[in-house]
Amino acid sequence: MKAFGVVGHPIAHSKSPEIHGLFAAQCKVDIDYKKYDVQPENFESFINDFFADGGIGLNITVPFKEEAFRLSAPANEKVKLSKAVNTLYKNEKGELIGDNTDGPGLVKDLSGNDILLKEKRILILGAGGAARGILPSLIEQAPKSITIANRTIKKAEQLKEEFSHLHSINVLGFDQVGVLEKAEKTESTERIENEPYDLIINATSLGLEGKTPKINNQAIKASTCCYDLMYSNKNTAFVNWGLENNAQTSIDGLGMLVEQAAVSFEIWLGTAPETSTIIDRIRRG
Ligand code: NDP
Image (cartoon, rainbow, N blue to C red):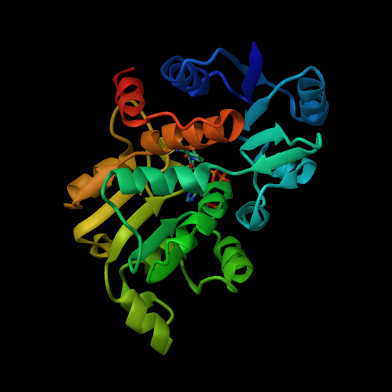
């Protein structure tokens, strides 16, 4: 049977085996997809052994996405930019290729929820690995503006610099979001920042503590979508924040999780699973 898996540390919580199992049943292919909890010092040798033993594909999760990028050849320009890999496979020449399906997965889930990004104003909260991973795909959708707010401003500035050749990015502290008086008052900032956002993405890990970034609710308007990359069986703190502040849509990242898995599955097996029924199934638990 074709061997696949997800590698992380820790990994017990991962829903990937269940999701890929449902895809395989739907597409009528036999796969063996396992969770692998690997110590950081063993990551590289694990990858080498897995593929040497005939493994077909691996998903990579926290904390190994950057190391997977270093160990593989990037599948495309977007991977080069994001410097993070969540999907590994060997090409026909036997080279280890790294792709990142998080951004395509997010865009697909957003469009599945009727959220299109062209000419939209996007606010990303957080500037860690997930923000970096989704930026190339968001930019590809030609939004009107992208603003990144982060606790550590330097990390947001770094992303702004790395992506500046593709799209201009505004950088703010959480306390400056929706509060024009406190924002950098350059002419362009003033023009751009005194409007609420069409899409607010929470890409911080604060939800793990049941918290949300402290931003002013003026950032929300009636048509805003609040999207939490984190997902949970019950509403996440950020989803609740969006609902409390009357965002039109406030959803978590379970759809993105399934969609990014579907893109990986298609890369490995050449078949795109139908995702909406699987999202519902995983949501029901
Ligand atoms: P990182 O550790 O790389 O980044 C964490 C981010 O959260 C940083 O911006 C960090 O700010 C911020 N942060 C952490 N603690 C605090 C705090 N106490 N106060 C303010 N800001 C804080 O994590 P990732 O980017 O990898 O993951 C972020 C989230 O995205 C996670 O919840 C993860 O589960 C989710 N995710 C979901 C996916 C999906 O398929 N749905 C896919 C990938 C990620 P600072 O820079 O200042 O440290």
